[in-house]
Image 1 (cartoon, rainbow, N blue to C red):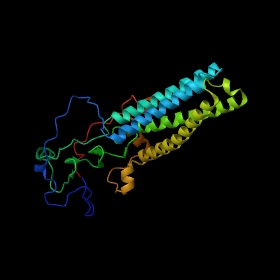
Image 2 (tube, rainbow, N blue to C red; image 1 turned 90 degrees about the vertical axis):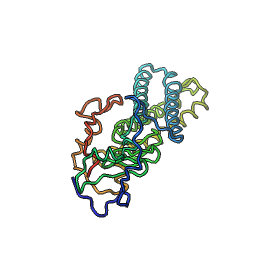
Image 3 (cartoon, rainbow, N blue to C red; image 1 turned 120 degrees about the horizontal axis):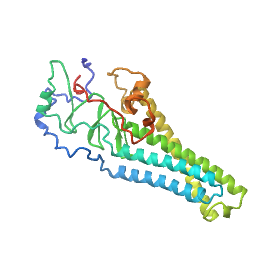
Length: 299
């Protein structure tokens, strides 16, 4: 337990009866276990569709413009396998990041019954979010898009139509990593293909006409360069955030550290799972988050 400094009022309503449990209805009945998490946000859904479209466009150009028309069978097979594997892992990571509950706090749990169940002692404080009527765990923040409080919320990303939080940060990191890798791979293949077409007859280096081929390759080059830079920066900031155990919101707000400091390796294992394994690179391996702390709501 720790005392709250006099200046620390981040989520407390400044009234004597700031919890006001009588104004909170009981949380809604949860559906069956395994119910899919999905945010119904028009902008986020559009961005997610654009993301898939751009990956599939790159897939089309790589396969039908560069690899299939190539006379080098070994080159085409090896690069086709590598690119398709990375693209599959990128889209799988995107789905897991989008459809995984990022760590939402039960909505409307600031009821009298729930507060009494915490068995608060004199001097102990809990925080209530006035927007979703929830008792917030430490380091949780409210997302105006998801309309929920999210544990260890880093930011809301429209490209995955979801918040990046405690439960899905691994998948978001993998998504940025695999997108950066396929972007780099595509750029390298475009460079080799241009060199090959300059040396050979343009009509023989692609099944499309030379003007169409050039336009498709230039668009892919622009897309690959843009997303390589963007996702590489996002990947770096996410890894730095994990290693320092400080979310993007906490860095932005310069919040006072109130949690125990751990080593960078322990922070990485907390996100990607224990122990280190190939599962760290797999979007299908769910990291062990451990059991919920019954005192996470109390400070």
